Figure: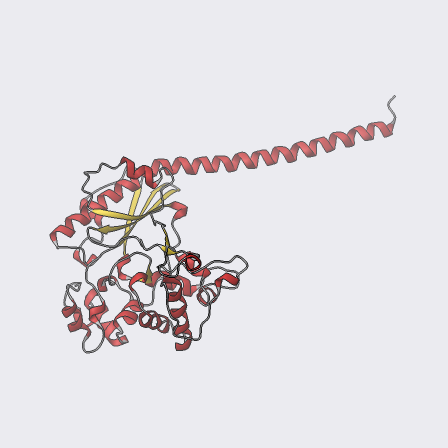
Length: 379
């Protein structure tokens, strides 16, 4: 007969074995479940991606029709705010498609801005004047080669734990704000996360290159910073565009030139600081099928419209080798590739004689798309 102590030891070994087996099986099931979720998401993306790009092509076709008919795009009030509905296009059965349009050229173009405009913008945010000047100074010092600060501001990025230098060219990404002295202390919280000021900056300023903001797509902050319009003037402009207030007996309108803008705004303000044509437009496409969602974000520019920032970053070591001329590092900013093809592959596959009506400045899918900034305050 087996001693009781021996039987107890066997039971303990069996129980330990069962526990380890259960733990291993649980871990395997969790990993398999995660792998299945990832594969399911990739499968959903593959099924819905084609629908999203089809909707984008339909949208571009409708926009081109309006652009040719009206000698350019000016405002969604012209009737192109619902391109899918206008074209009568319907998605595959069981799917829904939404298209939202945002006038990217209604923002302040950072590569064409100045100290006064930036300081005005920050003061519109209710930031004290001296702090607003410092913020504008710090931003321009980051973007402009040889910039001379106008405030008692000293920056020495080379003394940071990981040394770096200001690139001396306009922002290519909003994430650069986290590296700029004074700016990073205002636009990010104590945990390094973007705060309301950061998102307001994203809503007000563009990293794409175009001469002036389109007044038809400008928000209250931009109207105040660039046009230096008062609250009353901004309300007049909003009423004109929306067909409300003193313009309630009219349909929604849009500004066609600076003279019309000055006439509606009244005395004062800088109407010459605005354009009236869309030069960059963000197209947001959302495809739904049951619980599956695919999102596509594209920034497009008509012929002669906005462009990517092409100015090269200054070489921080140039001063050590030559005092007569600065050298530059050739860095070309390209639209981010999709998950299925690189930008170079796409370029190689495009026929050279294709007369495409718009230039795609940015193309993002799903998780690549940053969250939308909170709505800007109304005038």
